[in-house]
Image 1 (cartoon, rainbow, N blue to C red):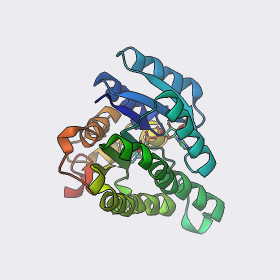
Image 2 (image 1 turned 180 degrees about the vertical axis):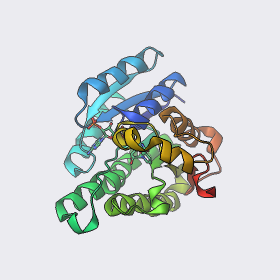
Image 3 (image 1 turned 90 degrees about the horizontal axis):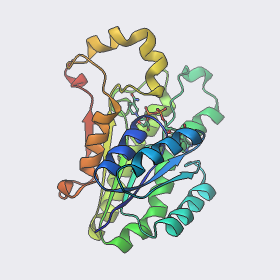
Length: 245
Ligand SMILES: NC(=O)c1ccc[n+]([C@@H]2O[C@H](COP(=O)([O-])OP(=O)(O)OC[C@H]3O[C@@H](n4cnc5c(N)ncnc54)[C@H](OP(=O)(O)O)[C@@H]3O)[C@@H](O)[C@H]2O)c1
């Protein structure tokens, strides 16, 4: 079966690495982005080199209207979809006392509501295909908490409940739903923090280094493949053993 995928937040970081890996492995890719149009176009061009179909689709994943419009584009351009990676994310560091409701809603909106909306509107495509994979990107913060990211940690913990719930609902349709929970990964999201704190962070990680986005992408690929046929509702941590410290 020819495979079609949608990766949200694929213009940069982990999403970008995932889109390129999928293309390398022969999967057609829809590259969702919000602001980074040029970067999204670069990902499309990289993917096309592997002989797959690749399109970019702009949508704010926290907007019901924009997500619906994104699926209209996918229907028109691809006409099928079997794999969804809910990767789009946003992290803002702020003390809880200074966290206003707009910021709370924005972070929950992108990281949690976005995954709900995209999965919801993908279901008809996945059911039609008779085979599907949804991979959600959670975080180490779902388990560890984050003193300056209560909204982010709450959203990423919410992703685990969302994953298990959709997994229960979709199992009978041959659709598996799983999550990855990365630790420190070298992307724009962590660049500022790692610039000043990388040595200190490395000391906390048993493998002694942060992850490259491709190392997370390979786990996402496994969960999106036939090889993960008996895994659903699961969370795979990709954190260099940080829990053992
Ligand atoms: N890096 C880490 O250490 C780490 C650790 C654990 C979990 N994660 C999670 O991994 C995922 C990817 O993170 P990353 O580190 O690769 O981040 P990143 O480099 O900052 O990239 C974030 C991506 O999300 C997209 N995005 C943001 N808001 C969006 C929205 N409203 N609608 C659609 N797309 C949106 C961005 O698109 P535009 O640029 O086009 O706006 C960009 O492509 C996130 O869910 C993050 O929480 C990251």
